[in-house]
Amino acid sequence: MLFLPEGSQDETGEILDNKATTSAIFREIAQARNFKAIATPVVEYATTFTNKHVGMKLHRMLKWFNRDGEIEVLRVDWTTAIARALMKQQSPQTKWFYEGSVFRNDKDGIESKQAGIEIIRTEAFLGEVESLLTAVAYLKELGISNYLIELGHTGIFDEIVASLNLDEADTKKLREAMHDKRRDIVYEIALAHGTEKQVTQLTQLVDAYGSVTELRNYQSIWKDNPKLTKILDHLIELANLLEQSGVDEVIIDLGRVKNLPYYSGTMFRGYVKTDGETCFSGGRYDKLYEQFDEKISAVGLAFDVDVLAKHLQQVQAKPHICILADSKTHVQAEQLRASYSNAVVDIQYEQVAAEQYDKIVTVDDEIIFSKIGD
Image 1 (cartoon, rainbow, N blue to C red):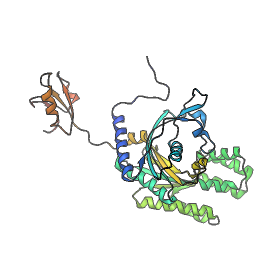
Image 2: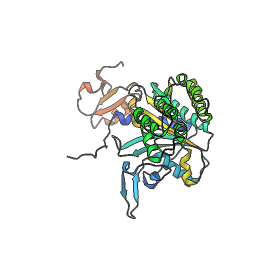
Image 3: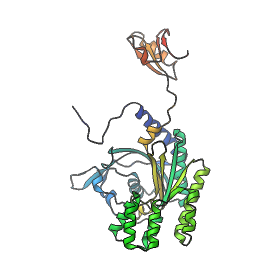
Image 4: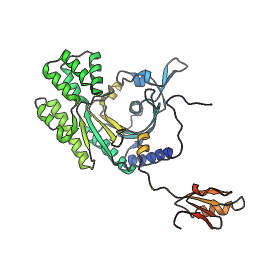
């Protein structure tokens, strides 16, 4: 018996049809909004993703040594690969879209299918709005309406923690605790390094999320800190624009922290409400281009195609029709097939089970079985 490696899986039927539909709709939406397609190789050097500007962990990648002794990996991140490609091409285009898989061995499935957009050299607010509204337009076309969008910002955690003078290890530990909403660990680290006021600020930050209305009180709490109030104003402006654009629910997580070094500002995620799955994520990552000695504004997001395909609103199924024929009448059967343009049509030479089809006819159009109107 033949087996697949853990994390790999075959796919058949409906899920593949759904992924094809999500792909076709994504391309239509992206091209209509003036995004240009880009693709990168599935095999890259490990250092593209492990350098200090990107900060991904090698043990999470599918990797091997090439004949020159260098480590190669399967593409683990589109944003980083596209940044490398764009710096090589020096194209004046500012809006890009991509589709394809990423590979990581720290997830249930090692291959994840993504579709995403990248916007560079664009005014910050414009780029973020265009990213988010592209997501809104795409989800609408997919018929997915039961979702919410979460906004966050890397600058909030960075600003509050800056005065604690933590070493790299404690900063990493604190960021992980904040990510996991571990109030106890956040309190422990803050207490060891900060004042009572700083301890209170950090522990409150763990639960500082909710609607725009509920979080306006942080404008008064942080009124004496211009950096934090500026960030709040920016997030609230984004949230208001999304709500005006028809998004039913926008929440803000002030305690959200970056999971990669290159994130450097606004972060966003989309969640499907029915099961809480993340259908897209992204944000600002200006720092990513510093590895090329470039100062470039950059923002984008990636859609999880596997999640979208699962939640794709199903269109009404086409009727399944069988035409009974034989080798001598197959041409006539093929001609008859054309008259059923809005159906799935199968040609068979032998009698078939009625439950497999909505309608069974012969070449001379004699109806043998039908459970649909004629």
